Image 1: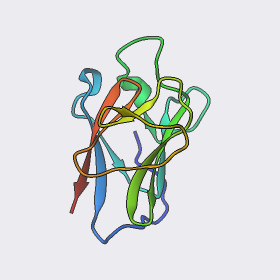
Image 2: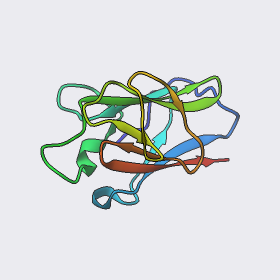
Image 3: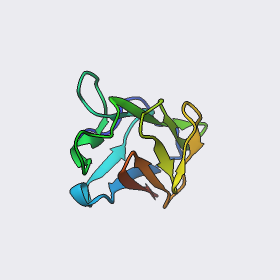
Image 4: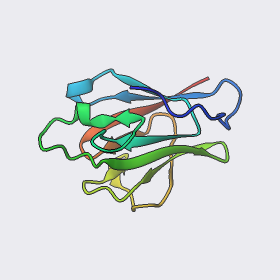
Length: 122
């Protein structure tokens, strides 16, 4: 997995974000949000930055090709569900498609049934 795009990160100096996989099939795997945005999905016909299909516990995979986007906006990390079939969840609440939701340290984000914890490093 690669971390985000090579764009400048509009955050406070030294602030970085990692997503740590909590799902059994990928427990402990980490993804660094290393750019302004990162596309989440599966690699069938699209270029994605975080291929969570590898961690999906069931087949057929519940992960949409373009499932969600994680992005920095106004110094705030947020997630946007891109109209995925099985949803994106923050702390157990399903997101409204195409509506940005801010993320904080310790939040749990799930793409369908693949769960990650948001961790900010100083």
